[in-house]
Length: 232
Image 1 (cartoon, rainbow, N blue to C red):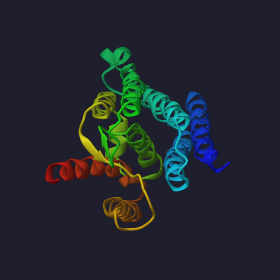
Image 2 (image 1 turned 45 degrees about the horizontal axis):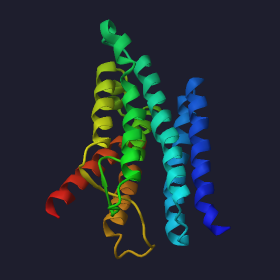
Image 3 (image 1 turned 90 degrees about the vertical axis):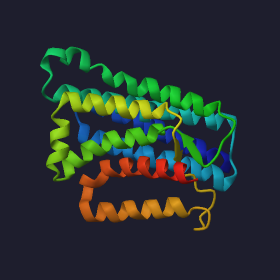
């Protein structure tokens, strides 16, 4: 029975992602980002549960990717579509720009498929993980809705900027840039130093700057990953 716990968490991830899609379609972006956040937590939890319970399976691997494409591909892609269509500027090419978010589910699918066939599993990802890209997108909404950063509000008000960010972060998913993972093999500090220090720094950053700091976290993650890849 315990070997099904990770799969159950993965299914809950998918369900939460699907609910977020329904909410986005009805224009309730504020609640939708909370459900995508729940999917992110469940995605972390199912992997941790699989490692702690030694409950790995081929079915679990495939199920995880299928859930992720919904929660971290389709849902954030649709969310970005709504954000771009709600923004201003670039009216002459607005009809074309609204389709840029198709890169998010498309490149997420490539990213997840490549991960599934990669036999050289390690503590590093190749390219930005799909959940990381999803986190960046929902962080913009969180910072706008609950933060007090004029910069974020200006970003969300520009179609060109949103489309540029979409293209950049989608492309990062299919690059081979090494990025450290948050896969905790155990709950001890030794062996998890970078993960724990980074998470601690994020908590301090959020405590100091609130929701406005959320977009900075994923940018910091990318920068730290690149630095670690260079010095290692």
